[in-house]
Length: 382
Picture 1 (tube, rainbow, N blue to C red):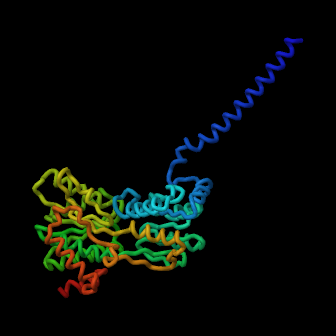
Picture 2 (picture 1 turned 180 degrees about the vertical axis):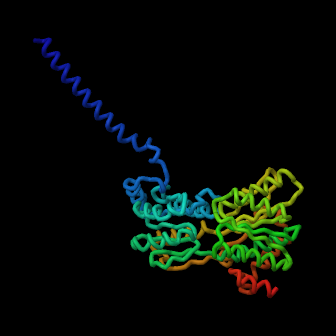
Picture 3 (picture 1 turned 30 degrees about the vertical axis):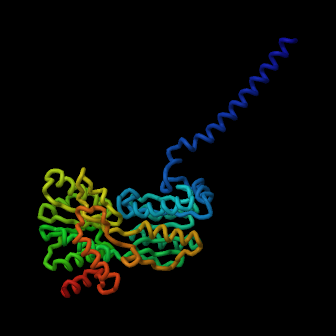
């Protein structure tokens, strides 16, 4: 009888232990399954829709995110500057990355709509489309989601819930042209653009106008790569230009410009006595031209996308979102300008000339051409 009671008690304890073990296993799978899943740590462009939407809403009273173009946040140019501005906004306001601020990476043009819609579903209060290539997608998604605020950089979308952020790239590019014309030893300059568009033509025309203002007889070769994410093509174009005697190239081509820098550095490594220069774009690209103790970056046409992104996000958070407005940043409000990081390359006479021309533009004594037609008129007046 005692032996029978002992067997019954043993069976009961064994069954109870198995139940506890099963419960513990289930809880462990629930907590670790998500964190160990590779998709669980990816950015907003790759997150699952349901849980991430809840995270974005729980991140605070305000949240903002951006959709890149194909250049990505590490393009060392336009998209990177925008992301730095959003990061600064988030950090300055105590927001957590991925919940309070985030980005969605676009691998191709086909990703724009899906990325914007994903961020809407994740309940971000303000969503940026970075670059003119996102105009149609922002226009469509903003129309479908009137309760969400959007911003487009480098174009205009006529929607009451969209702020349009533009820049006077031609003004900053004019100063880059002045610097190039004063630095060149061959009187031959190059311009490498990404996609030939009205926007990039503003960079081109401003640069040509500035250079011609210093030397009307200077030669300027203009070529477009047809892409913002083709560094190999940028390198080939730069190789041909430098091979023809051009010694200063200004690029407005996003990640394609990385190839221009690579070619200039290759030339400098193989022939230290040959002077070749690159003028960067959008952010200070001085680091991109560094080769040991020397540097092939003459200057950069700095376009303060970071400042504009942070400013509009701050306005939106404070209930002052400039929906339906076109915001334009130029030399007068330090929205564009030229970097002076390479103090050896930018001599005092070049800096003095830059300041003189800048004063004329800011004071309204000089209107910088922004189209090729305006440029032709301007050059004929010199």
